[in-house]
Image 1 (cartoon, rainbow, N blue to C red):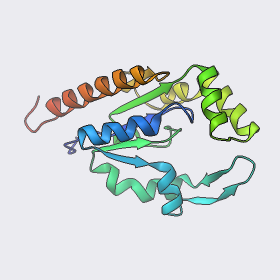
Image 2 (image 1 turned 90 degrees about the vertical axis):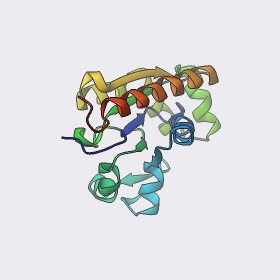
Image 3 (image 1 turned 180 degrees about the vertical axis):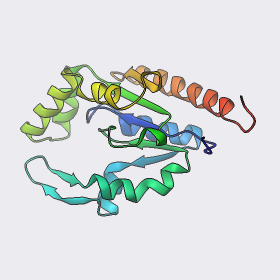
Length: 178
């Protein structure tokens, strides 16, 4: 039985698809809290060091989950991370998988000065729909939505759609709602 009064949403997708921009805008518009897993990993020491080749932290998933569990179980979070399969199903109400055209993604990652191996791995992941499949393997189909994030118009449309979903969730999960 749910006791949360606000939903938890995962915003996932390959780096460069616009997760953080979507999360920040949604947090500002809805009052939900943006939970950047990259920030949590760094600030709370939920890692086993730094991978020099990929220029990223090696995440300790157990430490990470322990670190955020009490907060997330209360509800009202938009979780911003490239992976979604580690978060327990009971924590999550909506999984948004953002997708981008691979040519645009290449340009975005190149602009971030990603090392070639990291850039190629992320492009391959997007092309092969790795994160979409991960979401499908980890959560019920009815809570997963795949959205395109190629343009600012796409983002505005996505934000409106998610805000509408949040409103419906709150109505359907209000005290006394059947």
